[in-house]
Image (cartoon, rainbow over all chains, first blue to last red; front, top):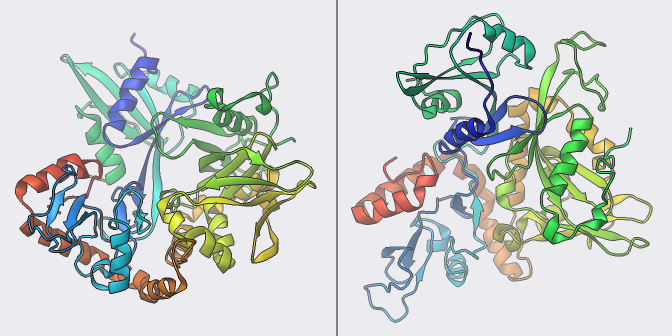
Amino acid sequence: MKVYHFMTSRDLKSISYAFIVNDINIYLPDNEDECFIAEKLLCTECNSPWHTSLLECYFCGELNYYLYLCTVCGKKYSITNSNVKCSCGDSNSKLIKACVNEKCPTNTNAIIKNLAKEEKGVFDLNSTLNLSLTYCVKCGSTTNHYATFKIFVLNGRFNESFDLYLSNHPVFEGDVILFKNEIDGKIMYDYSIYDPKMNFEPSFKYNKIKQITDELFFHKKR
Amino acid sequence: MNFPSIVFEDVSGYDFSKHNKKHVTEDFVSENFKELGWNVYRPFNDTGIDLIIIKRCCPRGHEQIDESANNEVCSQCGNDLVHIKRFIQVKTREIKGKSNSSQFFGYTLKSKDFRTDPRHVFLLYSDYTNDFLIIPMYEYLKIFYENKELGKSHFGTPSFRKGNNKLNSLRKHPNGQWVWKSRNNARGISFDKFVNKNGLKLMSNPDYDINVQKYAEQISEMKLHLFYTYSHGRQFNKELEKEINNYLSNKVKDNIESISSIRSETRKKLRKELSSELIDSIENGYLVKFEGVSFYD
């Protein structure tokens, strides 16, 4: 009888990286628990990912599009080419990482515009005129929360030892049981959000972890 | 109950130097929470969170803070137990100054550290004091929201947005009390409610889990107020502060209503103005790491 078993250290790393590649954070237990935590910071209103390293303009909330703007004519250039000069040829021209919103006070208010120019633009590395994302990229909400799942991974064919596994492990309602199996030479997955009142038989319908993370975190059904 | 307790009996915090100290603090914090019945999880990748800790407790807060509940229901009120979860961001710094006078704990927090989930907790620790200062996000912001001048010097200054606003106002007196001191508040604000067992009790409030959204909204309100009250700091002048605050006074409300359409309009303009090569280069080189952010949305 093949028995479900928890991942070896290498298996666990492999599964963890399959989550990380989908921008889901992973936390491993610092005790004997045979599970891990998958976490993602999301908008509380629309469930979009909340990117804390994405910058927005302090004044108008416009996002950083990684562009240089000419201080004279406003023409835009890629920041990958740092030696570029604006084609307008004006002697006063400087390329700065300005806010791209034309109506932003850093482009319309003389005093604030001057301040932004002195700081080499809102999105310069040393600028004091930007913040980490404050308004959701999709809906503009200002609240976010950590979505988390405690995940137990079972490797092998489904059989009666599953009940034994549950009785020996701290699986609670709402925890995720991730099933992994090799079928016809391909690794396939299935999962269940544990509910003690429900029976679950894995059908191994997923061939990528992304399909599962999309459903768990973003409620995207296949 | 000693909290924190000296879980590594063979070595003292004084013995470490910068080059061999890595992970010791997180381990020390982790072992202390484990001793009190918390399950501890450590990040596999760099996430900005140093520990996630989980425990079962009574939703009405009946369990003792040094016990782990093993039953399905609270032994006192019969309510079903709930899981509480905390996302701990550890700030370890050497405490400066002589122990017979006031010592200070200097640390830096950036705008990206202020998420609105009430389960996010700052844990400030210096192994020279063996004190944990455990401060839930809601409580941290509340202090600075209620003390406007402190809030302005913490969150309003250019250096906060630049990410290098070193905060040196948190002091430990020789009598063991922790106080936030400033020029405008000579007596200071007591931080004792966050120290060790007090902080643990405050952090363990299950209401943060039961009413995440309610607290998130309150945290957001305080955060926006604090972030958008401009202070000229050392670099700029009062006139500039006035000009900027005039603009910011209506900005927060306006932005919540219109930010999505402002951003959408900008993307539309950029799509017209930029070459497809430049758009592709930005999409693939920079925006690729920000799911949901695209010129084509």
